[in-house]
Length: 188
Image (cartoon, rainbow, N blue to C red; front, side):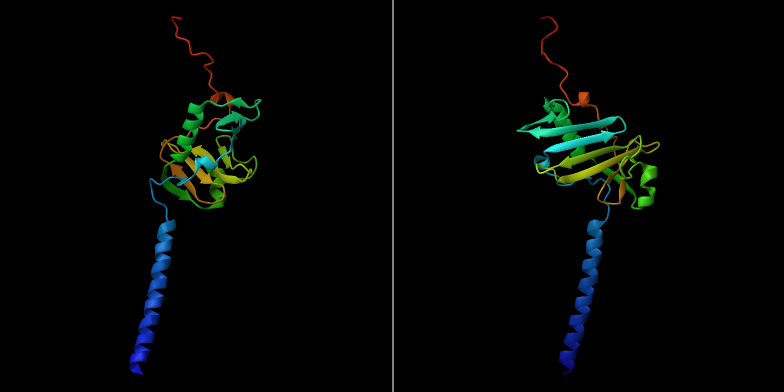
């Protein structure tokens, strides 16, 4: 009988220990890691519409066949190099530090998600799939003093991060079109 009770006691101790270790490992997985990306594993092939909104206006880029067009400008084609640069910048947003997860501080940092309350320095970038379901939404807030980075936040999470590098997203449609209509050498 003693052996059975000893084995049951040992099994309970091992069960409690494994439960505690699992909880500790899970919290480590969710912990912030400097140098991590804001959008890890984001599949840009799923993106069929993008909106970029700031205090100056909104631009809507919609996918038509294999290329993006300006939805509000008679479906004018977007420059492939500019859209590639846009996706490259989005997928390489590297985080330097976690600033806060307190929603009360979002407005001060320029990352509040209330409609129209993002602030003058804020940019709202939203990605949609082909059914207009929101894939991801990023609020890019103010620039930190004496640092190149800006405050960013995913709208579905309260955590605010500081990026390692400056981010520049434009809401002006002219930033996405190819302004060079003819490719003619100067001497010609």
